[in-house]
Image 1 (cartoon, rainbow, N blue to C red):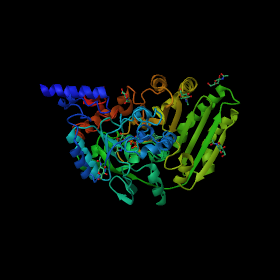
Image 2: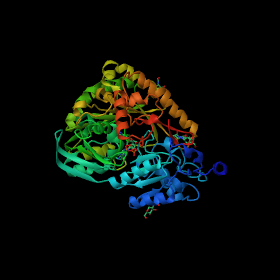
Image 3: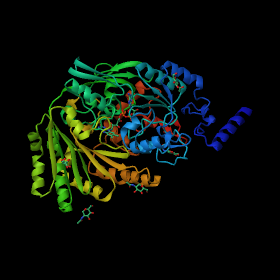
Image 4: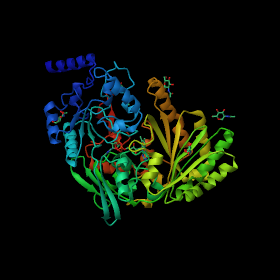
Amino acid sequence: MMRTAQLSWVSFALFLLNLPFSVGIPSKDSKPSCRCMPGDVCWPNVRDWAELNKTVGGRLVSNIPLAHVCHDPSYNKEDCDYLKQQWAFPIIHETSSTSVMMPWFQNASCDPFTPREQQCELGNYPVYSIDVSSADDIAAGVKFAQMKNIRFVVKNTGHDFLGKSAGKGALSLWTSNMKSIAGIKNFKSSYYSGPAVKMAAGVRGADVYPVAKANGLVVVGGSCPSVGLVGGFTQGGGHSILTSSFGMGADQVLEWEVVTADGRRVTATPKENSDLYWALSGGSPGAFGVVVSTTVRAYKDRRFGGAALSFTSSGITNDTFWKAFSSWQAQVPAIVDSGASAAYVLSANLFLIQPLTYPGATEAQTRNLLKPFTDTLDRLKVVYSLNVTSYSNFLDHYSLYLGPLPGGAYPVDRLMGGRLIPREAVTKNNQGVVEALRFLAENTNAYLGFSAIKSNANMAVAANAVLPQWRSSVITSLLQTQWNFSAPHEANVAQLNELNDIVVPKMTEVTPGSGTYLNEANFALKTWKKDFYGVNYDRLLRIKKKWDTKGLFYGPTMVGNDAWVVSGDGRLCRS
Ligand SMILES: Cc1cc2nc3c(=O)[nH]c(=O)nc-3n(C[C@H](O)[C@H](O)[C@H](O)COP(=O)(O)OP(=O)(O)OC[C@H]3O[C@@H](n4cnc5c(N)ncnc54)[C@H](O)[C@@H]3O)c2cc1C
Ligand SMILES: *[C@@H]1O[C@H](CO)[C@@H](O)[C@H](O)[C@H]1NC(C)=O
Ligand SMILES: *[C@@H]1O[C@H](CO)[C@@H](O)[C@H](O)[C@H]1NC(C)=O
Ligand SMILES: *[C@@H]1O[C@H](CO)[C@@H](O)[C@H](O)[C@H]1NC(C)=O
Ligand SMILES: *[C@@H]1O[C@H](CO)[C@@H](O)[C@H](O)[C@H]1NC(C)=O
Ligand SMILES: *[C@@H]1O[C@H](CO)[C@@H](O)[C@H](O)[C@H]1NC(C)=O
């Protein structure tokens, strides 16, 4: 009796003090169905953490958010100004054990734009991280989280748009510093023979492209060089400017080295633990195990044709502008069928391709690929800018259009939505898709970006869990809205709502039966299960339950995530 009374008094006092950890209401301890949080009696004590720290060779970090230097008592003007400048770009977030790029999940708990007097709080950032350096460190972290019933997160670069690399009250494995890269001259197996590259968990495009080049090779990676190839990219599908020629990121995988939810180390290939291989290759990043390394196919480096092309609506009517765009979109199937890809953006008054990527092509061949389109532009009297290049290797092409390494060209102060555009939508209803895009360009604030690629299932090393709709699509749309750190929260929420209520549904209307790239989508999409995973969902869930029996691996929109709910205080509880 006394004891109960004391405990509730303590929690009441914590509530009054509004301590950052006051969320840990001790009475929740009696429910093992919830994860333990700081302040709970069941939260590991100092000795437990010290022991874990010893097991991982002193690599345990007690997290302080990156932007603490922008808040009292550790305010430092110079450091804070630097963070303000860098915040909208990837690299600064990669240098931190906690930081994630998506403003929604940063949740203003400690960012450089809130007032100096506002207390810097962990919010969604994990409480502890292990700066892992080996499979043993990873296994120690997994076992500790299981044994102590605490939320578990893997953070690599922090690019995730869905919030899967953050987690309130969590122990996180920070994989960024596992950067070893090994070339394999001749990987031999029943499913592939030839050059390959083995990449440890923290390897990004920026890390591997130069190493591949030095060995006369090229590997499939993202358009942003700072995206982690072993983490979300390959495990989530992965589209690349090389995809029309070589397939998706997940299609490249020869072997996964994995630490399972019970801390065992296993290998997954098309022949060994093949269910795990299938699921990890494009299925649901982070849901099945912690990946230690991935071995992927590599290709002989070669010449790359490239182009940037742009025009605006000035000097032409709006209808002519949209006719010109329509002619581009009609060309997309032919472009991707030739092995080329194109990244492009569209607004009510600008169209820009940057870049067109044409493996193997000379400048003349590249111009020729674009000729049906540029002929139409000439006929419509649209004045355009076109620059064509041809480099002897991939890295030079990539660096010109998507560099500089390691950060790349893309800002990350964005919320994302997306939709795959099937070949059939373009060949049978080009005008309908164009009209939908015109409506969005003229009536919403969305940034409309696109990646035109194709990926046949037969390009894959073996059958995998890439959403089948990828195989019948020729474009993935990246429907974005910019986050304004100076604006009131409601203004950003209004943008988010426009994205989810108008922009994404409009594209969905003209792409019936299609799906959405699970890595480039919105966390609030209600139809995520069907759109991200489609016919694969049930099989993925069965595999998850086999390999993660206790449901350790959780994240928003991950396969199996509805076994959990986030309660009012941010605590994870079984649903
Ligand atoms: C600017 C920008 C450009 C992008 N460009 C492209 C592109 O061109 N093509 C494309 O396909 N995608 C692109 N993406 C999307 C990108 O692929 C995803 O954001 C992806 O999740 C990033 O993976 P990461 O490991 O770098 O990020 P993180 O946010 O660190 O991790 C992503 C997810 O993977 C899990 N994870 C990470 N490492 C491991 C591991 N070792 N084991 C198990 N789980 C792990 C995390 O828990 C999390 O769920 C882009 C994103 C941004 C922000
Ligand atoms: C873990 O040990 C290292 C080395 O002894 C130490 O520097 C670090 O502060 C410790 N981490 C924690 C969270 O105590
Ligand atoms: C952001 O923080 C508020 C409390 O300050 C909380 O109610 C909300 O759920 C959080 N949102 C996210 C996305 O974590
Ligand atoms: C082509 O190059 C010129 C000169 O550098 C530049 O001004 C123009 O913007 C480029 N066009 C495109 C589409 O990149
Ligand atoms: C053309 O489109 C722009 C952008 O939506 C718009 O501001 C302008 O009024 C349109 N012009 C005409 C003549 O309709
Ligand atoms: C961001 O919001 C502020 C405050 O509302 C506003 O002054 C500013 O113009 C906005 N910036 C952009 C790029 O919209």
